[in-house]
Length: 398
Image (spheres, rainbow, N blue to C red):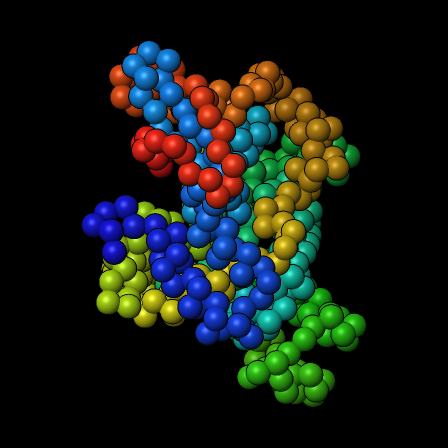
């Protein structure tokens, strides 16, 4: 254990080889790739370059990132660029946060059929929000929204749910008016919950009938249609968890929220407390007990297992846009929303060619400034091929 600055990569580097050997049959190819990427991230294994200050001569090594979306260290620039793109799309209206959660019985099926069930979660959620919003009894408008998949709870157990960020209003059916929702109220959550349950279960039955689902281990019996129907029967009577949080305090608060949620991984390095005596300790928030902050200790292998529960299928899109924010119609319909709200279109800035300039513009943090003299500029003086260490012992960039 390091006295401070413990990272997920430290844990994987120590446990990874033995864990992969002991769980050879249980690990998917994607899980193995994620483990390997995190272990190699910002090490000599991926290559990099040596930078030197043009004023004082201070040197440091900058090893390359793995860029894996499950890596806690590789999201900052991607997150910053995504948020900058979203900033240009914000409107001066109330924004709401609506969460759709799958019951535990469905979550168990989802773990064995990630791509299929997570896709149904997106589809059922989108249809529910758009259908209820379009109903004249509620809003009577076409809405636009962003949906973000999270598959974990604070304890790292499998807990698939969708966070939706929704402007409080939308376009009239003829596109000639902006229809705003009531102040502080978006759509009735009970109505959303009932329709979400019905739509999702209908889609799930269709996926089963089409042979799109697989079952094994404790769920193996669900291959039988009668067993599958019995298993789902209680979920058709239960209340599914859909809730709407209070509206955000303005567009800037929306960006702050999105910055915390969009490119989050199952656990951030900042939550890790210790790795010693075969156990990993990490901070978590216990929502069942007034959101109290606690420290959980898990056997190291169990910690790795829980993290790997949340590796997504290759190519799966965990952030999606719907309604007038959908990619195919966003430019035209967003411009129409601005016209109706009398909001000028944002002025786009030229994109810097160098990633360091882009990083500074997006985050305000300079990668050019010398950390030693704070007046010189760090320039590349040597390229490092993967697996090759530099000749000298300069500082390694974090």
